[in-house]
Length: 333
Length: 286
Image (cartoon, rainbow over all chains, first blue to last red; front, top):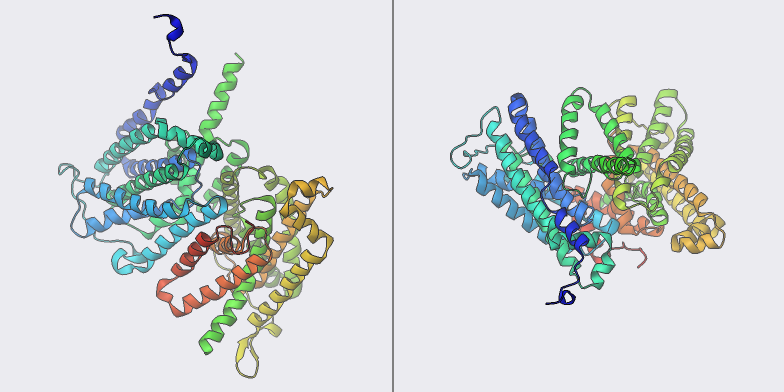
């Protein structure tokens, strides 16, 4: 019963680790804003749904890019696969939205698993190219299989049933907004759970030092494939949300532009922080709504400039910038 | 038979353009390890300089092409010193994002300055029309493209194999630290190589304006083809991209001619297969 038999605890380290996944006050902020926006801007709810869907998509990118360090330019393949799955189901007589989401997630996950199993063995530029090739192939297939997907005209004739049999999708987009918000909340819970789990920690390890993770016996390839599949499923769910709330699927859901925009929004917010999408997506999409309609040329120019500035001067995005500022302020009281 | 000749001919002309544009990208990627998605911007800039000079000021074709080569080469030196240099050795993601930002800015600028439409490109009188080779006729301009491309390729290979500058580049690609320690100024070498690569891209963009139309979206639309040439050819190689460009040019022309209902699907599938088989490209270093 002497103190000598007690395990040599490292209280500070343990405290730090436990503290990192305790729920903190600021984590409530996005949800408060989202709920407040529902009451404050009843005319902008369809833009609101687009933003929520964008956050889900961007979050899926954050998991593979920010945590596992896999640079992909083809995430839209999974977004689009989910959108077409939900869309085709609803167009062929099964418009139940929740099961549509699940089906979309499963199909996207299968696509993610199969493609990931092949391409994740490579690295660097080759991996980048392969993610691009997969998404271009899927897009070209959807484009040319016009009989099934509607091709360049888009998939028409979707009929989505009320959510839970109770809430019809209304013209003002109230149901759509709340539906997207609920799904985003669940996705966020799952993502948060994943990154704070031992599995999530080992992903960060792989990102930081892959050779070392190999050396300590971590199944690097399997871990990367797992997170790639999970992220594909989440992207698929985001795609299905878009299809169900707009009752239409355009070829654009599979485009390189969509992969790129998701990436840009994530970078502007801050990568590898789980909250980057919550900052970057609303900022980007609200600004786009304000400025891009008036003059898309200027919009492209400023977004390009912003990207370069972020990369050269603020690598952590807006959140990283705030974090640095905060640290400086605390150091020099 | 005549279809096969057509495919080979047009594929070859297309391949020359692809090679001229992409070879600089391959060398800069191999030399600096920089994933420069904005390489097509230089090709587009070359095309714009040439078409503006010809259509706007009546400058003769050869002079306009030379001006495109020099102007873009000079401009790229400024960009390399001001921007690219900061991100050597940075992670891929930063490089990808920086170059995507550059593409966006260039697309917007081109739209602002010269409007959304493609720039009309008409070859000079002595290069238009048909060339009669006895057994059949070929478009003169494309024959000229093939010939000019072949000459440039030979010149490039000789330059890299036989000159001191070429030897320095090869040394730096093989082992940058060793090259540095025997007194090669790699920093300056990077700048010159970057400029040469960009100028070649401008040349490709200018000469190929008849095949790849010069419009604001150029750098983004054709990006995937330049990347395929480089990735399949192998980074840092001069010969690799040539064979990759040949393969892509002829295969793409062939597939679009014979199986138009599948579009570019097979090209992507072919690239996927090749990259899985040889992740470092056909001529990449293991």
